[in-house]
Length: 299
Image (cartoon, rainbow, N blue to C red; front, side, top):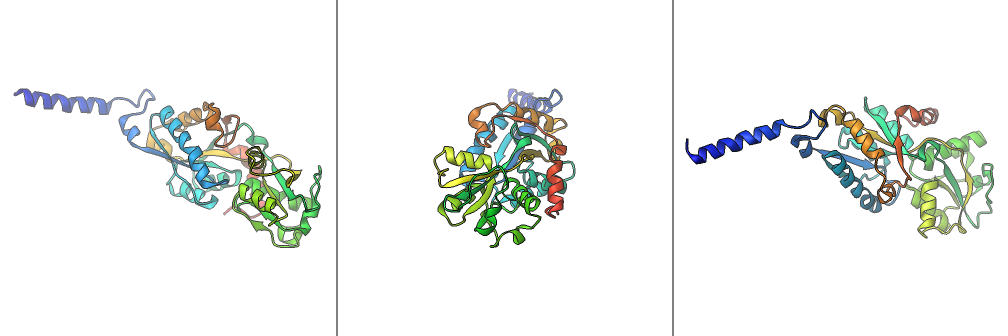
């Protein structure tokens, strides 16, 4: 056999040896590395800003897991759930409600991580300084007479739980409680902007979003004021698609969960924003299931 033929044969043998290695010891194979884990997040803030924040998360996960990871932007809350349902993404940073909707739509999907703050999340009810509404420990019944905006229709902290507390305090639906039909802004930052501008005199949103807007100088707390803090409830979470196991091998979801919980870089955590990520399970969000079922928001 010629030297050229021997060289070709050795190259072929080397290829099959490399292709056959890996995987059994928990490391990623070359085949896994060629696949892409796609994840998204509900667009509860400015979509362009979210992309800039979550792309570094993709880089971190790619390095931690040894597979390609890509952040896929979502146009709205519902689209995030649909992408997960259709298998276009295998991981998503959902709110409490969208996480429940996604897990109910995909058998075998499960919550795997949440922010350390998420078991005891809460909403702010905010009002413009000229509204006549003052901060109090009790539900601000006076908001019934002024223009009010929720966030996204599928937001946990911007709609679901605020509506729940409105019903609990007044015994009325929002359409019965408010003198004018309430608005849906689409996101937390938009809610705050609408109230600060006076286009709407009151609204409800995530406390995290409001506090960050104030810290960044985008909202003046003397103009756009917090008038009530709701009782706590469970909220945001990372939900994993069952396809992860078939795509990347048995046990991959646990590796992903560990990578998320081990993420301790403050710059990466600021994308959420959270001080740390902790483990989660789907049962942690039973209260959201119960409230959403009572409001007929699960389909």
